[in-house]
Length: 440
Image (cartoon, rainbow, N blue to C red; front, side, top):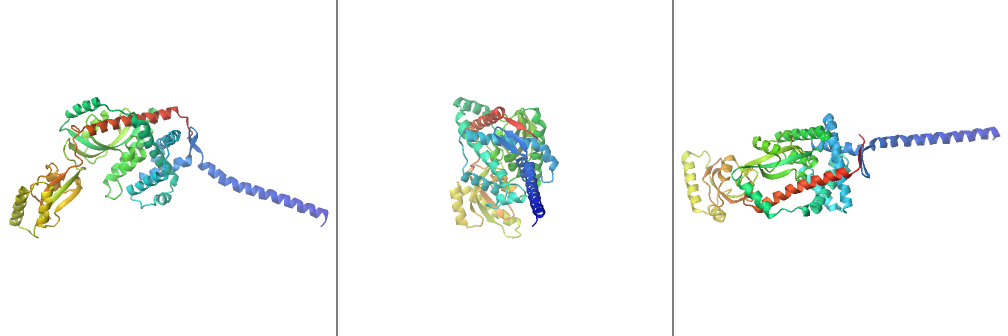
């Protein structure tokens, strides 16, 4: 080979190495650019970052939870509040790390199983279900971890600081006696705090959409999945009851914020309110039941026994009268559920004996009216239905406790009020002392 040929080969090899290097660097550059696009920073919270990817993933989770898949514009309007929730979660996890509070794998798995149960997802398939919606498992994992960590912080740091004195309980019980016989309400709540005017519109848009979605869900056919209101409360609510789906329990006039107090008497049972503005933020209420203090509400459980006197097909008036008379006579001879159940065994009629614990609202209107205020251990008047003539007896009312006379319940309510106030104040302090740089 001549010198010229050797030079040509050398130059060719040099150029080939150059082109291969350019091609390799170009191949690397494109995925890196794509990765950078997905990992742009949406916010910095102290030493941690929230990426655009994190924010988009959380928005997909909310779209799945709240059925907003085709409502991108609504999600965009909710974005500031969603980002704020992610910032709060970072602050909670950072505070837990500072306090050396950890969440173990068993706690995480138990929380995932609860999510699956509430949403009708087969056991162990939460991650697969999320993947089909394009939601990374880490999105739910970080949310669960923050919620569990905050629950531990509140329990360990705040709960021991709460002191409800005997005088406070006495004063509250005196106030409650003024409401004896007045209505009380079984309420769940979604609450969004508004710290300043900058958050006003975002908080309103978020909670208004949650209200609309929860209301639409109540009109949908019943399913085994829990009501959407509870899922939305866990996703959005900033109250201390968020983990329990916003359940406030039974409340009376004067216990809640004035604006909320005024709204409750105007609501029908089962209704979900529009957003209600208080001095602290926005509330959406779900009125699950109403009763007078000491009475049984439709959501309460009740332990029952019954004796059924069947009627023949096409029973005539004489058959009905005979069954009603027999039921009335048998009812007059028994006192207490033990005697009632024994009589049911002796008579041997179908669908008779101990019915266990049932929810009042699940009974037919006739049976519900008969047992709602029936004293424990006393037989009801006979009730006719398509099945025959029923003789009912209330064995226990586990849910009915009059707060007027229940010191433990009064103390618990006062404790929860103080705990809610302290937890929100704690989170506000974390926000104020944190370095937060929002880059959207």
